[in-house]
Image 1 (cartoon, helix red, strand yellow):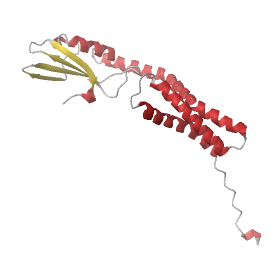
Image 2 (cartoon, helix red, strand yellow; image 1 turned 90 degrees about the horizontal axis):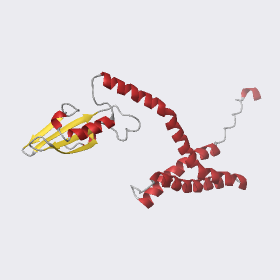
Image 3 (cartoon, one colour; image 1 turned 135 degrees about the vertical axis):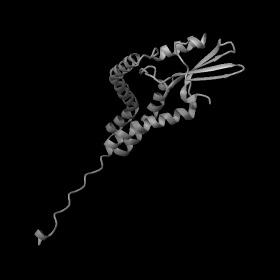
Image 4 (cartoon, one colour; image 1 turned 90 degrees about the vertical axis):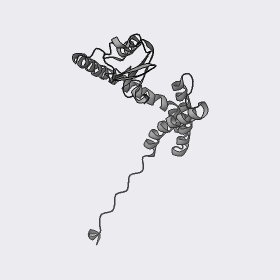
Length: 207
C-alpha cells in the first residue's frame, strides 16, 4: 500500500528574511533620507545638499536597522549589529556607486576622445563644450564673422537680429551636465553689432 502512495512533498524552503532585510534597509534609508530632506529643507536645499542627504539617510538607516533587528533577531548582539548596519549602509552604497563611476570613467573618456577625433575629421571647427562656449562669446562681438559659421536660425526685425547656433556634441563626462544639445543665442542691433548672448539648453529654446 505504501508503494502506491505518492512520495512525500519536500518541505518548502523558509523565506530568507535576513537577506531581504539586508537589501531593504539601505534602500529604505536612502529613500527616507530623500523624503526627510525634502520635507525639512525644501526642494532645493542650500549648501552641501549631498552630505546632508547622507546624514538624513544615516538617521533613517539607524531606525530601519533597529526595527529590522527587533523583528528578525532575539539576541542583543545581533540587534546591535542590525542597528550599526542600518547606519552604515547608506555610506556603503554611496561608496559602491562612487567606485563604479570611477571605474567606468576611463572608458567614457576614451569614447569622448574618439568622438572628438571624428568631429574634427569631419571638418567641424568646434568639437568641445569649452570651444563652443568661447565661440559663442566671440560671436556676440561680431555675429557675421563667427567661428560657428552660418547660424542654424536667424530672426530679424526692425530692432535687430537674433542668431542661434546649436552644439549637438560631442560631450565629455565632465561637461555633460544637462541632457540634449546646447544652444548659443546672440542678439545684435540693427547695425549688426552684438548686444548680448546666452548659452542655454536646446530644450529650453523659446519659440
